[in-house]
Every structure is written in structure tokens, then in C-alpha cells.
Image 1 (cartoon, rainbow, N blue to C red):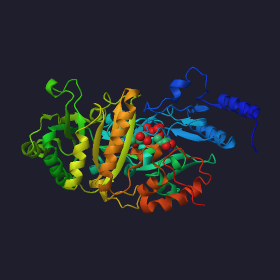
Image 2: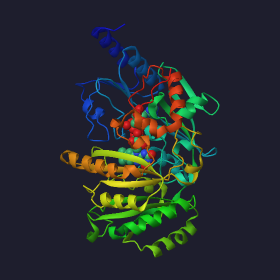
Image 3: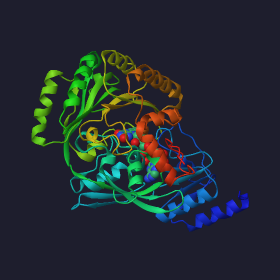
Image 4: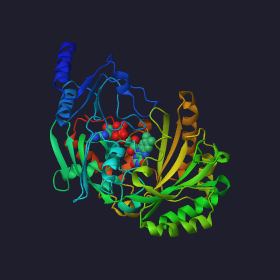
Length: 465
Ligand SMILES: Cc1cc2nc3c(=O)[nH]c(=O)nc-3n(C[C@H](O)[C@H](O)[C@H](O)COP(=O)(O)OP(=O)(O)OC[C@H]3O[C@@H](n4cnc5c(N)ncnc54)[C@H](O)[C@@H]3O)c2cc1C
């Protein structure tokens, strides 16, 4: 039965006073800051933001949202390009206060609160010379990145982030709290590893960590004239590289500040950002033949503490820039495809805009495509094209460039894309294409755990009933 405005207000007041966190409403001093997400293009106005301090707050928020028929979004790190952490007129379950880490150095595991960023995890694990495979930047939320898959520097050695997920505590749509792992709610545990925020609010993650302290890593950059040869070589090289060596290919514009020499400032170039996670004494011998084959214009590869590598790009990409993303999975780069990649890659519209090819190789590649919900284990790369700029006035420019780039290279792709690199607007067919034959199983599990599609502000999987 529909509730009256007065009942709603009374219930909202009761919710506010029951929380250990806080309830933020339009008109509150903190409202505008609380509704902001990483992508400055997103400007949504929720009716309520529940900043949860603990699991009890999350349960209360889920129950309130369900009882009042509200649209509900879950906000982890707020990094999602489509702004899926926030919604218009609904309720945002904001996990940013649930931010703790607990490392067990003997078991080499780390328990992580649902609102942590990867910087929090790197900070905690590095003290024990451990690390969990994550992404390429430290400000991204653990929640969204993990539930979508998690592609990063250590994918070839230790797999995707989900391949290192041991358990998740989750508040379901009916307000129940369960732990999902291989032994308990195994169907849900399977779905959480790639199925995004479709199944509930994950309040804590338990990860396997690995011995990582100092890696040999950084960018190697070449002039654009070398791009055809470098791309050809890179495709052969990276698909046969040992698990210890990972590297993503990029078109980029050199930032106009140190450590880049002035004559390269604002220059459109290509490069590979390497990460060698093997024995440090073997690193030089690994990179020497690459430098000899293609002497780079700039080489920043060297020993670096793991958290420093993970936060290397943080200063370039800060909160509030305009972002527009397009993506695909790619298996092979034909000569024709390479030509198209280079055409658009050498016409980057702004200094921060870029195109990356992230390898899905080594350990990430060897997991079976039905072993987790993340289907594209057989892809060679997850490609992402991102238009980025601090200026809202550049919105049309970066959107137009990214769309055209994608349109021209999409025919050479597999058809699906990494869900974490898609904007909200891409629709059901793209989501299905990204999960392939895992979609049906995901829909069945969604039907069991969230039959009313209560959690639908995500790359949505429709419940099969
Ligand atoms: C600068 C930048 C760099 C990136 N680099 C990488 C990378 O290297 N590798 C990679 O794999 N991805 C990368 N991404 C993509 C990233 O994985 C997604 O944007 C992801 O959605 C961000 O997670 P979040 O928690 O910060 O997002 P949010 O916007 O908070 O949430 C995104 C989605 O995840 C769900 N969600 C978040 N937390 C939870 C939770 N605790 N429980 C249930 N659902 C939850 C939300 O419902 C929402 O649908 C990058 C993004 C940015 C902006």
C-alpha cells in the first residue's frame, strides 16, 4: 500500500535517529558534496543519502528503500563512469564510512570494508609486503571494481581481483545478511564475481593477498611514427609474455610537467605501462631486449614500491573531471584495425584523453569462462577509450571523439565489453553480450536473490522468475 508523505517523513526521521552514520537530505549543508561522484558529468539529485557506518545501517537503509518503493543505488568508491553509485529521486546507500582493513599476515588475507578504496587496501597490505590484484589507480572503490571483475597490473600473475576474492558479506534485497563463499551460497558467490552490484550490498570483502613489495614498473613511451611497428610487436609479445610481465598499451598526451622533459610536453605519443612482478634481479634482463628493439623516447621503468605504482596516475585523474567511456573486448589486432586505432589515437582531443588495451592474459586468461560470472577469459584485451577533461565546455568534444573512435574500431572487437568500462546508456543487449552464456545463470540467481530487481542501478541483469 502506498504510504503518505507524512508517514514517509516520520519513517525517514526514525531512520535518521536509528543510524550510527547519517541521513543526508536535499537542503542539508553536506547534500551537494555527498551527491557528487568522480565523473563531473554526473549531476543527480537523490531524495535521501544514507551514509552507513556499519552493517546495521545498511540493513536499515535497504529495508527503508524497499518499504517505501524507492529507487536505490549503492555507492562504493563513487568512481563508476556512468554514475551508477548515485540516482535521481531515490535513496543512495553510501558505504564511504565503512572503511576498514584487517590484514592476516599468516593466512595472507585481508578483510576490507565495503566502502574502501584500493589505496586503503594497498596501504594496509604493503606494511606486510603483500598486495591484492586490483586496477591501475588507487582512488577507485573496492566495491564496484571487484564486483565487476577487476583488471590491473597483476592480472597476468595473480588473475583478476575476483580470482582473489574468498568471501563476501552481503545485505540482500529482503534485508537478510549472508556470507557468500565457495561453501555458503555458492551460487551467489559465483554471481558476485563479475555480476556487479546486482545482488545486494557487499559490506565486507575477504581477499587472498600475495607477496608483493617492490615491482619493476612504469611507462615506456615512443613517438607516434613508431606506433604501427610497436603495436604489431606488442601484440605478439604480450600474448606470449611470462606471467611475471604485464603491460598495457596506450595512446596518450604527455602531461606538461616533470618528470617529462619539456620538449615532450603536450605531445601525442604511444606507450606501454609495464609491471614486472618477478625477481627484481632479473628485471633489467627482461626489459633490455625491448629497449634495444624499440629504443623509447622516454623510459620510466624501474624499481617502485607497489603502492607508488598503484597511485602513479592519481594526480593526473582527480575527482570532478568530465569523463566519457566506450569499451570493447578485443582478441586480435589486424593491420586494418591497427590503422584505425592509430588514426584516432593520434587525434586525442584533450591532454587526459586516452585509449588503453589492458591484457586479459596469464592467470586471468586461464580461468574457465564459466568458473565465475566474468565470461571473457578468452579475450586478449579489455579496451577502453576515454575522453577526459576538467572543463565542462569540452564535454561534446570528448564525447564525440570517444564515440567515433569506438564506432571505427568496434567491428574488430568480440562484441562484448568489460561492464566496469561501460557508461549507463549502453542497454540490455550490451550487458547480455558482455556476459554471453553466463547471462542466463546470472538471471536465474538474480531471480532467487532479488526477484523484484530492487538493485537495478547497475549494469542490470533482469531477474528470471
Ligand atoms: C579513473 C578510473 C580508473 C579505473 N581503473 C580501473 C582499472 O584499472 N581496472 C578496473 O577493473 N576498473 C577500473 N575502473 C573502473 C571501475 O572498476 C568502475 O568504475 C567501478 O564501478 C568503480 O567502483 P566504485 O566502487 O568506485 O564505484 P561506484 O560508482 O561507487 O559503484 C559502481 C557500481 O558498483 C556497485 N557497488 C559499488 N560498491 C558496492 C558494494 N560494496 N556492494 C554492492 N555493489 C557495489 C554500485 O551499485 C554501482 O552499480 C576505473 C575507473 C576510473 C574512474
